[in-house]
Length: 219
Image (cartoon, rainbow, N blue to C red; front, top):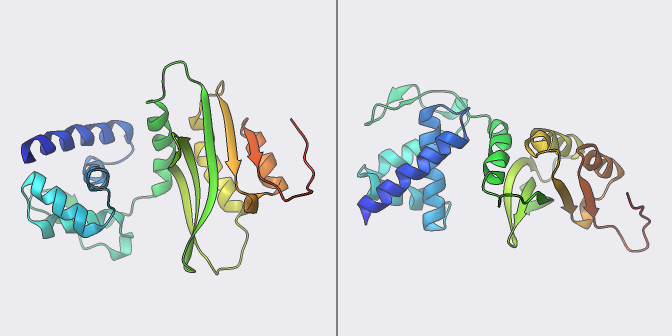
């Protein structure tokens, strides 16, 4: 079983390297470990994923745990450059997650059925207790949302979300072919004139929930 899982992990990692060409090989390899572990265990917990991957590749669990932790840390929180057991260098470079948004969109759309040129995106704000708010643009597929661009903000911090949403759409707007029919759906709480026009400027079609007795116009 471990041997078969190891080969599946290798194939998965090859796909990550192919779809995320802007990452270094070591960054792509650890991203492959993370994503494969999350999918197979149905958990994003560090301990769960580390234990699963360690059993597959035959490494110590603490070694794998450190690799996974170093991947998502800010540069100032990373350990000094060193070499792990597999001689993979871990430096003090933080990964700019926004550089992954366009490749992620392109990668998901590459799996779309041939000839299908319709797409639904969802813009959503989700609260994590009273600490954080996650602003996310997701691909809607078979009843679920696949996040492809996101921004995490402090839930209680004053300020407009407008620049964040503009930036998120800016990261992915050129990743969708121009001849595709794209609907962007949002919940009622996200309605705003500027958001409506921002979606239109992308060449997409807004599908925004509005308050009862509100006014709207068709385009």
